[in-house]
Image 1 (cartoon, rainbow, N blue to C red):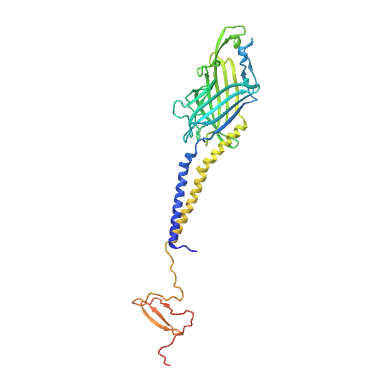
Image 2: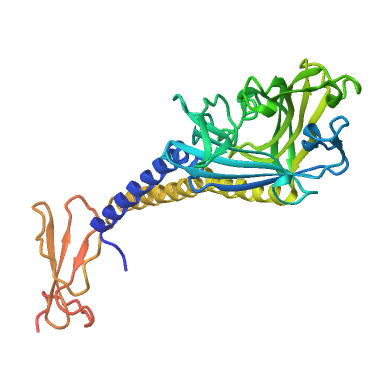
Length: 406
């Protein structure tokens, strides 16, 4: 059924308006909606597991040998280690910031129970959900390395670099990375672009130079005074020798750049006792610890989920809206222009015309066979004439000579 001219104009206006709205939405979604979506989710809950590499050196000081026995301190070799970290989102968290809490442990798996625990800490920091950087408040975080009867003792600590998330849209540049072991930030330099399981990642490397842990936390284990024979400096000398525990680390991070997710991490950590930072004397811990395969797969899944969300609002939805907008706009313009003038309709058969002849027209009358007169109008300017029949079109028409007498 054909649409009337008024209906066509209405539909055309609706289509043009819809098309324009869809095109505006296609332009606005990447700049406005994506900025709302491109944030670290508040339901973040991540467990990472890293293990020492079986084909590399892994040394751990037997702490009992420091305080018992007659011989020097014993350093165990080929010690299997496992590092576990559980990250959750805590308050305060809102549309712009989030507070991450990470509980970490490092233990040796060749002994049972708590005797295998080497280090444990809880780190809490409030960060931007887009940049991953700590908020500009003081303090913006806290760290616990000791416990009392009430539980972990949280000490206020000012975080100065990223730690658990890289920025949304990570770039190939240097970022400050916060090391909770010495509570300082060191440069995480971009090394290369590579792939992990067909996913593009950026590799960064952070090097923490030898740093006194005694200067960080005045814990008894960070500075010890023992006989020289116990340190192994001189087997027959019992002169007290004070040594400080130093920390150094080479940390590698493989980051999915769109979401800032750390897909894989590795640490070549070295803790040692020495009288000078540049002259290690007794190893406390030395090992290369790397995310296991299950953790890498889990991190890849998290990155893929967030990447799909960014792709949906950043590319797919704008393209769909843009195509639909162009189609609606063109359809509206076509319908509007096509319906601008309505075609003339011929008079139905058998309908008597209402207008009379013009003033300059002449009329001639013919008689049909059924005595119904037919009037023919002829324009004065010799233009073609139109014959308007009176009566039934279907009856035969015969011209009668009026001058003929019966």
